[in-house]
Length: 282
Image (cartoon, rainbow, N blue to C red; front, side):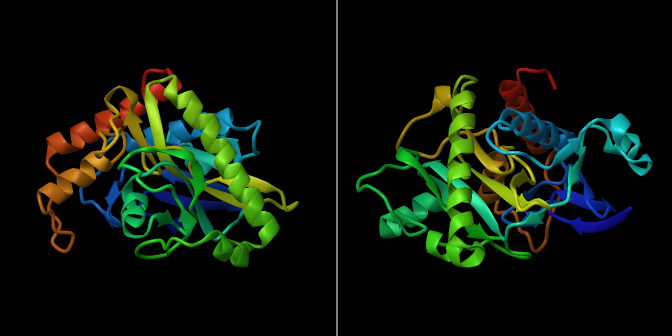
C-alpha cells in the first residue's frame, strides 16, 4: 500500500482511488514535537474512542468510516500490528481548516481573552475567570499548518477560505456535535472543555465528518468532580505530559527519553478516558 502521509500520530495509506487506511500509532506529541518515547496502546485508545463518537453522532452528520473490523481489512493490513488501531475510510476532499469549538475559557483562548477580551474575533463577556463555562459554545477555527503551529482565524476569514454557506454549515455542525457529546460526557463525569473536528466533502459534495473525534489528543477532558473555576484543571488528556515537560524544562532540541513512570501515568489517563466514555473495559 502506498503511504501518502505520516503525521505526528497517524499514518495514512491509499488503498485505491476512493479509500484510505488510517493507522494510529503510539507516538505522542507535545508543543508540536514528537516525543522520543511512545505511549503503549495509545493508538488503540484513540482509534476506539473515535469509533465510539463517530457512531454516537451519526444521526447528526455522516462520517468517513467504511469499517473498523480487522477481518474486513485489505489483505496487506491483516497483521496484528494493525488490529484495533486502524480504520478503513472513504477518501474525502478535506476542508483546509480545523474546526475548534470552545465551551470553556482555557488554554490559548484564555490567553487571548486576557489580552483582548475576545477569542478569534469573538467578543466575550467581561470578568470571566480561567476555566469558566462560556454562556454558549463558540466556534474558533484555525488554519491547518503542514509544519509548526496552526493559526487562529476569524469566521470572516473562514468564509473567504471555503465560502459563506459552507462556513455557516460547518460552524453549526461543529457546535451541534460538541453540545450532544459534551452533554453525554457529563453523565460520565467528564467535562469536555474544547475540541477540534475536521470535515471533508464526499463525491456528491455532502459534508462528512473525518479524521478523529473527541479523543484525548484533540480535546480537553476534565474530571467533573475536581472542576473549579479560577484555575487550570486536572485532565484526562496529554496536558499531564505537557506540564511534566514544562516543569522539567525538557529540551526539544536535545530530546531525552521520557521516564517510564511519566509514560505509565499518561497511558493510564488515556485508558481511563476510554473506559469512562465508552463504559467498556480497555
